[in-house]
Amino acid sequence: MGLIRKLPDDVASRIAAGEVIERPASVLKELLENALDAGASKITVEVRGGGRKAIRVVDDGSGMSPEDCREAFGRHSTSKISSLGDLDTLRTFGFRGEALFSVAAVARVSLTSCLRGTRKAWRVEVEGGRLRAEREAPPADGTTIEVLDLFFNTPARAKFLKSDASERSHLTRVVEETALAHPRVSFTYKSDGRTLLRLTAHRGSGEAAALRERVREVLGSEHGDSLLSAERESGEVSLTAFLAPTERLNPSRELQYVFVNRRPVTSRTVQQALYRAYEPFRPKNRHPVAVLYLRLPSDRLDVNVHPNKREVRFRPDSSVFETVASSLSKALLESKGIPTLGASPVDAPAPRPATSARGILDELGSPSMLRESVAAAAFRASRKDRPVSIPAPQHASLPMDIGHGLRYLGQIERAYLLFESAGGLLVVDQHAAQERVLFERYVSELESGRCAVQKLMLPVLIDMPASGVQRVLSHKDRLRRTGIEIEPFGKTGLHVTSVPTLLHAAGDVKDMVNSLLDTLASPRAAAADLRYDATAMIACKAAVKAHDALTAPEALRLVEDLRACKDPSCCPHGRPSMLSLSRDELARRFERSGPPRLSH
Image (tube, one colour):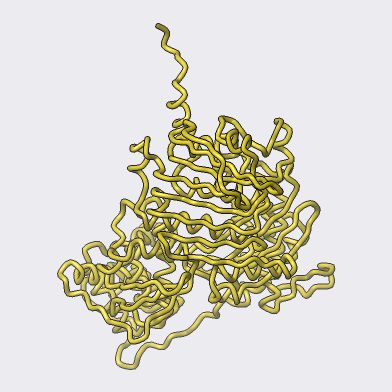
């Protein structure tokens, strides 16, 4: 018998399903796309057990005939394309012929549909890829499809699913993204009998107004009410964008959505353009809230980069980058009252020289990008703090000896503490140093059961999308062990009811919980101890910040506390807390043959 053989149909179908169906959210995405392609104006989604037990989607679309109901579960069956050339002019969402076939291969599926204009509905039941029953059903507009016991015949795949709460957050994200792309369709989303989202259709207003209202519904009023708008058409590329003002950036990347021809996508080109626009204004570890809608001809877009159709490529990338970066940059500059030099560059006031401007100008070739980048660079230069002279406190003269061969010399830019050490220099990052001190102190309190926690008199309300709420709540017990207690509040909110005493301000609490979204979204979160990440974040929020003035005694106390740490070399996030230049290194930098002798 030869080594090469044809796989049995059931084995081949389950392998094919593995390429398409990663988790319950993958199933829901396919079903929602089919409903939209059928022209639905109202969609209801119900899930149970994080989507493992049941996913039910009801739409009022065009429906299907009995023959189509049966054929829809066949291999390579689709109504979206008929030839290879159709891929270049695709205007539908779910065009993969493997979709329903793959879902039915690993679940128990029933489909009931009534073709619009007829009074005869048909029901088809498929289990593990095999047709089990079909019969006439009571007529009802549109299509109802129910997926039960996902991965019932592939237990190895089921074992890799996360908790119900985690899978529920992925499902919610899929509904949110679909709703953001289709503001004129109403959506109802229920999980285990509880309504998580109810979004009405916005049909009476213009497209941009409908999009803005849907963005506000999904992101919540705290974010949605403050978003700036930007619109632009450049050749065949058009953009409608809603983005956060520079003073309302977020600790997490979670609130970024990109749609191309209404398809939710990830694109490195678009993300780089987004961050380029915010570059002059964005502090480290703060991220823009943004919902971007791009439209371009389908033959300029390649959605077949990955089987899940999430990643896309543009032809060419440069025009998309220029359109996004320049239009967002212009909106941000105008919100700051900075002229964007929209007229001739000759008529524009010359910007203040800035060293960072040259790098921007060298990288960008488009005239509009050049003009807006110059304005942005000028703004950045104007924001730079002038050197601040910090007088030494009257009870301590500088430099001062503190023992261990150290002499405190002063503070640089109110961020770095400078010491003479054995003829060399020791520079300490005050924020990273205190972050390490507070982290080890807090970990010690947690391990000993002496963690100081305070119950908040008024809970801190955090507004975020429903998917973010579900993700944070899925780690509720683990967060409680760090001193953080949270409760759901409405469909798109959390109440923080207790926090470690290290956190003093409501803003710090909000930043910490929003930052957790990035931690929980990373693949490492499942294996890593969330307590470490939360503890490091708490220490970061409570630590002294860069540009905080420290007196000499405070600086000396910080270095003594750092010396007592188990690992004083870096902060909990791995950033160095100090650097040293020895006397020999200083001599080498000044091209001396050796350290100069001290005269006595």
